[in-house]
Length: 210
Image 1 (cartoon, rainbow, N blue to C red):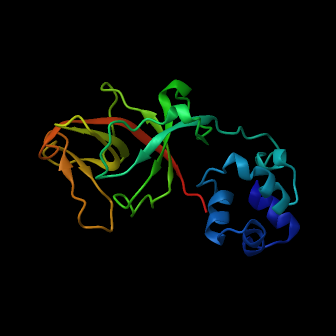
Image 2: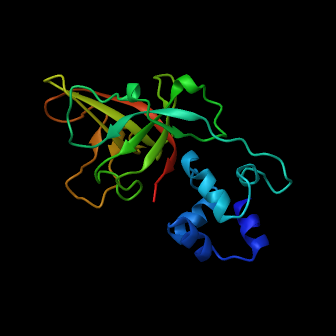
């Protein structure tokens, strides 16, 4: 609906981007539905598009498009950063999740990417919309997953990786990084001094704030 509102005003994406103080590419992602609109920016978007907040969430037929639910942000995911725990849900941080997912809210959570271990896909600062992973769920090769590793000292590292299965059926967790220091590792061979590796979530959406 954003594109239709803008075109009705006879405005370019550059004008909207200037009004919002963001990049043209971000405006394009919002108009194409490739990036979730953060709830705190809805009033600002409404002013930029000279519309009501409700107008932003109408489809081409004038029907309301549902807002995504607010899901808790569990913490930051950063490869190589070890801590006693990573869950910060009790701080009350939330993000808007995808509206088209039928996964129960109890099985959804958000994380914030920190560092460059997945910089090709998710630059530092990206918010990820995730669903909890359970052992009886099949993960498709190529999906991005949230991985938790525990070392022999009991410390936890949580990061995001790309899940792949090779021709021999071996499961790999692969960084998509411009930094060559990050290396792929097998799920069944997580590395020296690692006691356990566990996939705890599957990424279903991503949002990079301006």
